[in-house]
Length: 160
Picture (tube, rainbow, N blue to C red):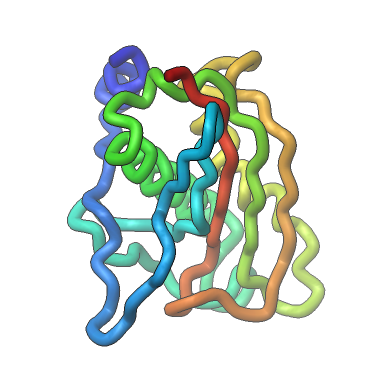
């Protein structure tokens, strides 16, 4: 429970599972475990109660890059919450392998990597520079589901 202890020390809470809007069904798991890997579906920023966290819209139009960074951090907490539900203990994550971040961006916004740093910085703070280090892409996209400014997926190595 080392990671959960670090989260508590930082005053961070893992949110409840995403509350989907009425009529929305997603036919896939949030986390798919196969062998010693866990593949994490795209997550967005959540409030503690599992509702989508604002602000909503595109970075550099409706949402500042600084607010986007916070959204990416909230997305990291949502991913950790899903991993904890699936694995039972975040200490089973032995290495972060890959992170793919999508940022709803206005035309010409070219600093999506700085926004996705909100996710990566928290992972590195919790797991350290060896286990937390990961390959990463961060791209700007025209739209994301439900108007969220950030969506992030990941792949991690896990212990049995």
